[in-house]
Amino acid sequence: MLKILSFFLVFAFIVSASPIVSSKTKSVLDFKMKDIDGKEVKLKKYKGDVLLIVNTASKCGYTPQYEGLQAIYTKYQAQGFEVLGFPANNFGGQEPGTETEIKEFCESKYKVTFPMFAKISVKGEDQHPLYNFLTAKETNPKFAGDISWNFNKFLVNRKGEVVARFSSKDKPDGETVTQAIEKYLKEK
Image 1 (cartoon, rainbow, N blue to C red):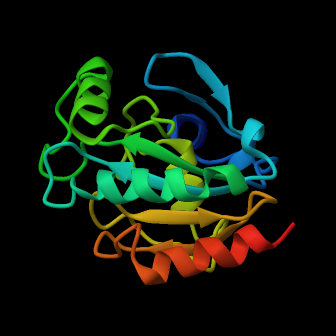
Image 2 (spheres, rainbow, N blue to C red):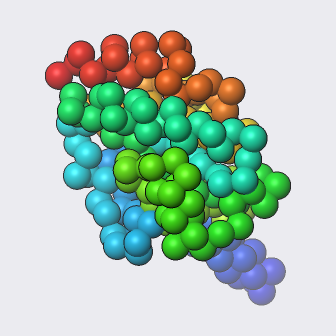
């Protein structure tokens, strides 16, 4: 009896400690996140917008993509497009800074004006629930799979559905990404 009770206690602990997404979570718009200044942001505020969700890093070979991200944000924002940047230190320690340092770097070096959020983990045991949702086969079967490196990108339509995924190598202002953005901006 003690073994059975111990098993259930361990199982309950593992389940409660896992960043599993609630069965009520149907969309990225269901999440609340902290922005880079520490303020809570309900992603529902972006309902009706096309979103490009990107895990970022300041000391990566792909860091110059901030320039392309800012360019597409500037180009498409008036049409209901948002870039959401999520700094992460999961790959080679390439985002070691604090939120204040990250914000200063992005604004001074790349003139970033799109929304940046607090640093999170996008992979591993401490993966943030948003990225669990984006990468899990149960919640995102078409575009599931681990984040492979910094600057992976998820395109989300106006309803909050993930409609495309792009690798780090896909430039945000490149033809592949911009064609997809334009396609979903046309949908109302």
